Image (cartoon, rainbow, N blue to C red; front, side, top):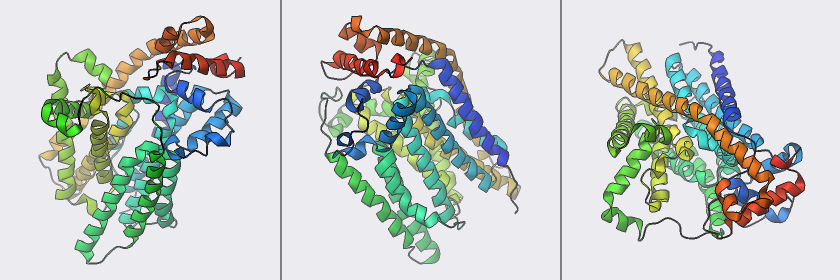
Length: 463
């Protein structure tokens, strides 16, 4: 069947990027805070110093950050806006990959717009505002692009250069861009390649050897990353509040782990701030979390009952990636013993991958039923699932737009404090700049960072 030309779809990611940039204009004033305090003390002012680049734990520091930092210092006087723009552009690139997939599979316009509404939801407000996390948006853009190439190869629509990209992309993303985010990426690729080999063997009774090469191209850079990660010298202590191991606490407080997971699932529908303003008990959180878990199971059932994976793996890969990200946050953050920790806006970028996978799976099944002229019960469930995801994300975005001016007021106050930091106490600086570590000298570190910026006329001190 001839594919319709729907290139205008690519205007939607552009519009989404413009929307995010407008939001940042209303919610942020260009002044360092939080993670930037550590970055300024660690890498400024001598950003060209090779001794700060060629370190054993280089890969954990995400090498592409060094280049971005040099450009920022040279041309933009260390502006947080520069990093924020990089983050928004990277988010738009992820949306472009999804748009390409939607066009290739001729998925309906309404489904496409629903996916875009999720991708540009302001449930990611913390990641958008804190420009130091821009590289994580870039990492996910790389993941989406790789999954898209993989889908083409699997669907026998391979283009010239796709095979080479399948080999090189893991090296680039794991070693230069992804940092700690490479864990789920690697797990998805290795499991996915093994799955593709199994399906090919069952279907054609032949071993698809190219996936062995692709798997090797994932494991080798990942081992390099693990070696670099082993060289990290912790500069803080007292991680979490829990006593004992994960297994011990799982038996001691099993309800905590269940609530943690369900609340993190719920966060893809209602952001943490919105949920706190609506609900005073755990029941609504848990109900929404169960709904999202059911949506995952429904999408997985459709994937395997209708064998969608035989022609396209992109939605299935997104589903598995989203589920693994929820599991990863539970495993890495449970020890804080804060059951709504997984609802934090900083994890929305990781979790939304799964929602995209759910919606694309529903869209493909919807299209299949239309072709066959069938009306099935699950279509009502698909409408309900999509409507709840949309309602939750749109309401969360609306809530954040209402909060944005107050966030900017705090930033302006922070800038005023920065300009008068010599007359502030360490406790005032620690609180104002949201720099919390286990170090006793965190206030002094804020002072040190602001001194570096002032001496070099960067950031808020640039006239």
